[in-house]
Image (tube, rainbow, N blue to C red; front, side):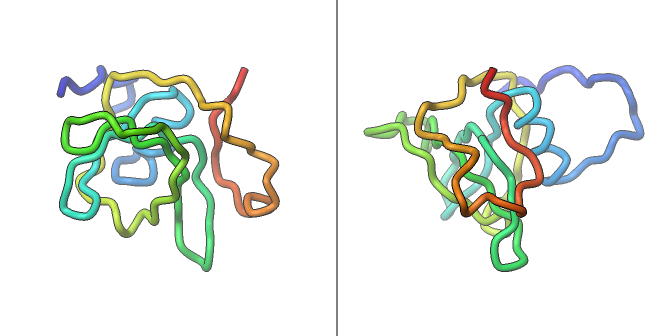
Length: 114
């Protein structure tokens, strides 16, 4: 999959967290290895739970195939490997409610629904 063009600064942070934050801000999908399979995720929010980083995201593909239904799932960052930004954009799904109590006080970044 083609990687998007860099937005300038060669000294920009790298690694899973900055990549996911960029994906959320720019509404771009990510690819990652999850349960030994390749998933394409549309990340909606990053937050902490039990002192670990999590994202709630829509799996738009699993091993190259679309899911039976689009739903928001929770993924622990430590369970995602080889995270890469794609050039595939997404629109936040209606099921995502950023004011759910479980996100209160623990949200690091969420998609702008505007």
